[in-house]
Image (cartoon, rainbow, N blue to C red; front, side):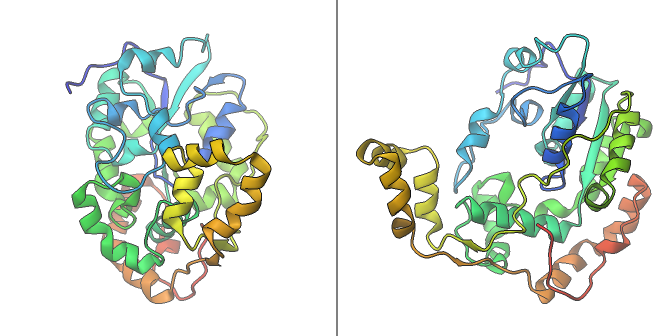
Amino acid sequence: MTYTPPPYASDFFVVGAAKAGATAVYHWLSDHPDVFLPSVKEPGFFAFATRPPAPAKGPCDPAYVDQVVTDGPSYAALYESSGPRRTGDVSPIYLLDEAAPVRIADARPDARIIILLRDPVERAFSQFMHHTRDGIEPCKSFDAALVAEEERLRDGWSWGHGYATHGHYTEQVERYLAVFAREQILFLDYQDLQDAPEACWERICDHLMLGHRPLIRNERVNATADLLQVSSRPGLTRRLRHPGKLQTLVKLALPTRLRARIRPYIEGRGRPVPKLSPGTRKALAMQYADAWPRLEAMSGLLLSHWLPHDGSNSRS
């Protein structure tokens, strides 16, 4: 497929990282009267314009795949009703995709960029937990998923299964600094979004040249920290909960109430939520440590709290 620039590109882009607060920021911005965001939360056009959004192998979230926009006219159509409001595109895949920064810069050289970063160890474990909850992670432990990661990505699994791989932010950030002026990019740390949301919101408004408005919705979105148990049969759970032949057959054969009643028996008893061990946390953190001074210099963020430390608690 040959890339064709879209006839319209939005005014600003929230480009990632995944599991670093993009959903919360999407809701913050959606509540601002001078902002228009499409109902498609993650259009992904600038990453998927030349390749299919569905992975070649492995499980994936069909709802995510179905929402991705892969042609320019359809992307432009998302913004037809924006009027005079500032338009945005919140697609975390843009930080990972090598082509996205250049494509965005070519389409909107004056675009404002927001890059959200998160402790890469916590980001990786949060992504793993998200997949575990949704039944698209076959491995029952984080360590096993990390061992399988390199082979999975080589075989064409989804980008979301790059748990450790995608925590190497330096090259991702450098791609944006190569095509956008530094003042066009706002860096925010996920921990600041959690601890000081109002201050972060003011910085976002200033960066996007928006009038300050109260922060209306600040609930945690897509959090997995409160999970008590996960499916013991993730493959079956995925087929039952996501669109497909098995789900269609079950819906045709059984009424809603009966499906809800027997689903726990079909899926089996839940198993304890996987944990991030101190040893795994430290070993994974050391993979990124050498790059953090460079990342601090580029982003202006203080990242000392990302350094390896004892303790197994993780915010997901």
